[in-house]
Length: 338
Ligand SMILES: NC(=O)c1ccc[n+]([C@@H]2O[C@H](COP(=O)([O-])OP(=O)(O)OC[C@H]3O[C@@H](n4cnc5c(N)ncnc54)[C@H](OP(=O)(O)O)[C@@H]3O)[C@@H](O)[C@H]2O)c1
Image (cartoon, rainbow, N blue to C red):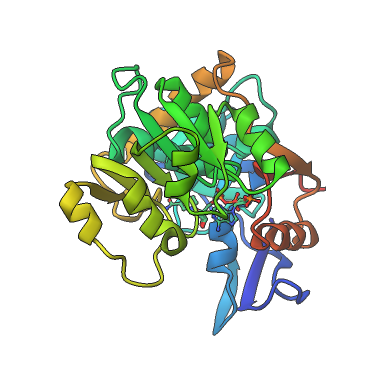
């Protein structure tokens, strides 16, 4: 089967950084589905795993986690899916990725594809949506049925892939949403996703929220450059509030301001459940199904801003390069194999 993989970890400008390869088609066993991948989307984790280093792979390493496709075979323990089902998922970082014509995926982390979206637009949702959903409703414990209505949240990096769906989910929970963006295009995109206010993350965020009349906020969801925004976030968080970060810090984070405020820090990593095979890993399948319904009901709108065809090494190198620059808006999907 066709796939796009790497053997060496090279800068993306190098033609050998991602290669068109032929690899054996796998067979489904146990809880696995064998999926014919119709579309994928690219996330920063793809270029972070691909980052240049000396390591050399003996077999092509297949990247890519977001995908939408059709089930073609099921393992003997599968109960929820059958061949022909259209699905979407964000995969498991410990297994071969979605940049291949066929992929194995544990049924517990798979959802049914929204009927009103094509494969490309469906593939743009899972990884960012699982991240935003788990961050808001499980780590920050925000009630998604509105019990926290009118509490405030600052979403740092509102126009990125995760921010685009996080804004919509926070509005679903009836929060006051202050998103951050630094350009006119990204500000307009945050407004389109439903943000009540947009402030600039190139300035001090505590001062930015003060300018629009907020002394502090109940929640902060930081979706970019944790170190850069940390100090301002500890000033902007309300006493007893909580900050959720999803990006590794590079330096130690000062905790003193949080202590005096009895404020909390929580982390979200969307691969935790599959990586540790947690007892509740099927929650990801469930949330993807709930999200499908919200998309079909028109409550959640597409976050996909560009679709490229076909899936091959050249197009993947191109999209990795665009993402590495850190200026993309919403999501980019890639569809079809020829
Ligand atoms: N823990 C997890 O499970 C998890 C899951 C998904 C993603 N992530 C991580 O979360 C980060 C965001 O992912 P994503 O897919 O949303 O990214 P993305 O789509 O690549 O984000 C692009 C946006 O980042 C904004 N940006 C650039 N520099 C910024 C800064 N210094 N402060 C705030 N915003 C900035 C830009 O907005 P402007 O042009 O307006 O500046 C741009 O529109 C990545 O580091 C990714 O690896 C973690």
